[in-house]
Image (cartoon, rainbow, N blue to C red; front, top):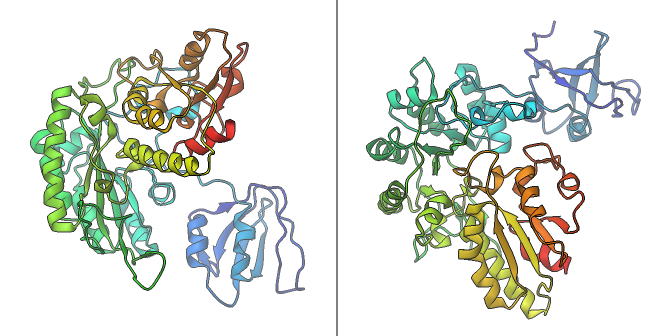
Length: 479
């Protein structure tokens, strides 16, 4: 008898054709929606990760499949055919978050939005697969054991504070947990960890933030490569092989690799929620100075900076960004730590290459975006575009009336606010209007449920969803 399966992997398509080796060879099997894989070589299968992890590299593998009728079917197949199977799987259902974080932005959404907007995920598998940040509060011993056994690395952990009492209050949980102890066990098991702190004035700034940094510094692993003259690590953790044309990545090592500090986001929909203050200009400046000192300590000990501030700190205070090399491997670019200087450097290189081939963009553009993104454009991007001699890019910052004027990032602009800015444009001349790709989800829908066609209805301008790193090429192709 097979051991019980705690879950199974569901098929989402109506028909799948795979080879069945036992009787006879190449016999076709028709699988239907609702069928699921329960075991692989007699081992219970919980999800697609199990299927990949436990599939042998040679010989054959046996899948036990439970039909939606309740019948079981066994299929023997070559391990290399596993992709034909996984391509028919339904998406994994994720575990939800039980914490009540005082700063959680999901709680700050108004009522009446799509159901998906209000879902909080807290799933270590999605952290491993997609880089989602998790608090580890729902991990449990079984999850911890599985991460270590299957080497789910890297993981992304929302730390916020290593002080147990402070973190317990911030996360709104009853059980006191030592996140440092859990991350130490993961680190010692060769799991790489990227961490994040949402900075909340009066909660986890100052001395609390200092403790958080030094606790994480103790869990960090030195770099595998020499530090460059300007202090940065060229492209991340890799060994330079002088005999090869390209740099070869070293074997991954466990430990905390990076810490991103981002300012708390506060919407206008906080009725009944914990009172929080935004990060002031004074606190932002003090944090920049504080972090600069910590980065020096980290570089002396590790060979890289470890802690990185999101771009908001520099844009808010008007301070100069660090050199791009000082962001090391840009491990926290998805937290907007170094995104602006990275894009500026990438665009500058693209402009230089296109200038050599006389293929610079020729089409004037209008960019509708958030106020913070507009500030980045005018301060960091416009000067290099002017110097390159390309057409004018009209950049217009739009008020965020949906979430309130304290929310200034491009990714939280709604279709309704962007449409309002679009309709405020004169009808002539007809413009080519570009929106940030962060405005739309993978289905091409804005936070308030608009497609780009709906956003641009009954107005004369041509609308485009831009790119980030490839913006210059995107622009040139429009021309």
